[in-house]
Amino acid sequence: MHALLATAILRQAKVSLWYDPGTRVIEPHALGYGSDGQILLRAFQTDGASMSGEHIHWKLFRVDRIRTIQLTDTPFYGPRPGYKMNDKAMTRGIIAQLDLARMYKSSAD
Image 1 (tube, rainbow, N blue to C red):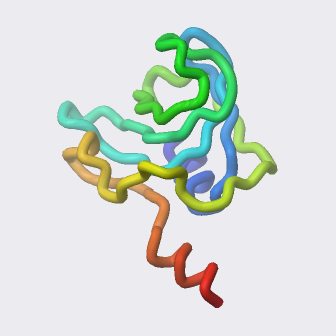
Image 2 (image 1 turned 90 degrees about the horizontal axis):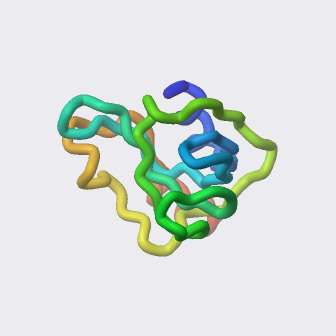
């Protein structure tokens, strides 16, 4: 599952996943390890279910709680406002994250 999420971050592709209480569509921004070694995903949710009632908002997901996941063919363009590299929730390291320097260089070309 981590490889698929890392690929989605690299390709800037939206992901459809099932995470309690239901299906969600997200834009994955960072994947890394939390303080207890759990794998975390920082993403901007654009559609779907929400336990908090915030259906379009930043979310932090525990990857071990994702039931199903599917990479979509729908791209997203750049980071959402509020994205910060080197997510502080990922205290034990980053596996993959959007590379702001690369994105800004590409958009300037």
